[in-house]
Image (cartoon, rainbow, N blue to C red; front, side, top):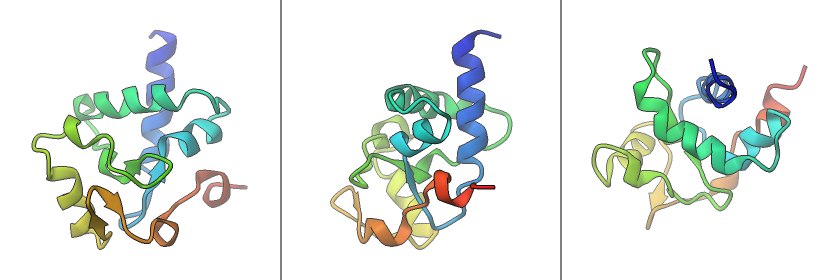
Length: 112
């Protein structure tokens, strides 16, 4: 397994821990994994999430402003928003409304 594949698997593990109805950011996952400057690589992992046998809820990962920047990697342009809204997350103009309310920080939530 190559290094980026190991990193992707770590990203997938964290994303699977995000509770329904909550969201986090690419940067928060990168920071939690000890690689704060690799948020773009977290995004690449989310692009590959559909290839995993075990579901990775990639729709719960947004940018640091709560914007659905990864929406174009879903089957339809509206699927990411639909999945979030199905979990009770409000989205307006491709942005999570009340982002702070729904934000899940792995540094806090997964602290020992």
